[in-house]
Length: 314
Image (cartoon, rainbow, N blue to C red; front, side):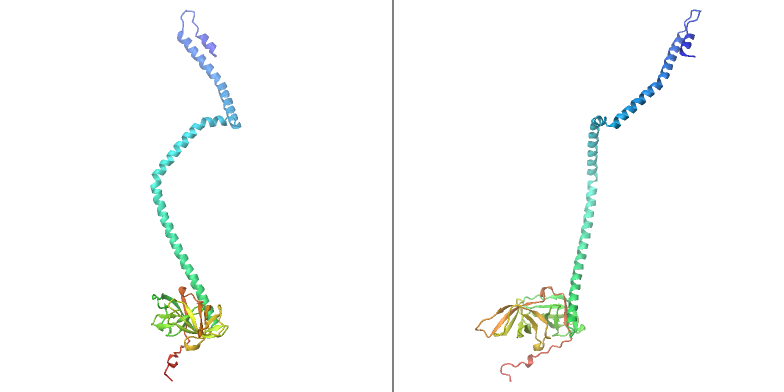
């Protein structure tokens, strides 16, 4: 039964009595049925509208409009986010600073440790190079026997030139034994204790070494000085001595074996009215950087001083 039939059933009967509640119910029923019949149409229209909007959005036509609409919201979001980040940084900053300080201290300690290791490795490399050079020197001079010693102290007097090494009489060292480096002669043992020895350097003012110049083969005397310089005196006036000539031990005098390199002539002083000429010498050894030395232990020095005649002695 449709809405019209239902409404006709609600018409007044022949008895003349009007049924108002029945007419009202008929109007409501008619409205509901019209609403029910229009819902599919509304759904279709709404679907078409949504599809159209999506198509327009995907084609890019709505991008400017979207940006215009969203720009205020993006600004608000950016502002809120920046304020929140600033507040968070303010709250967590003290803790972060403490953490950074702690890490910096750790890094500084690690850097100090690594620098210390680098210095130790550099010293070990330098010592290895010196030991290798000393080994080469010993192999090049097999006629001698050697005992290696480490320099443990330098002289503190402005008038004396010596070093202390960590080898003594317990190691077979005796007074007068020559001391060399891989570069050449540096001095001789002046005093000995059971575990250490004092080495008088050739730069000491009390040091005297008989030397020979090459290529002239001239014999002379090498002397130390208070200033630490070494010089050659008593060179004959007619001897051909020039800067660059080599200076070696001559073996005379009994204090040092022969043919040990000392240095080179750096300057010559010659005056016509002098009996002898003199020369300054540049030593091959660096006396300020002595670390490891070799003591020639199979050389027996001879003291010839008692055999040298003095004035008035036959």
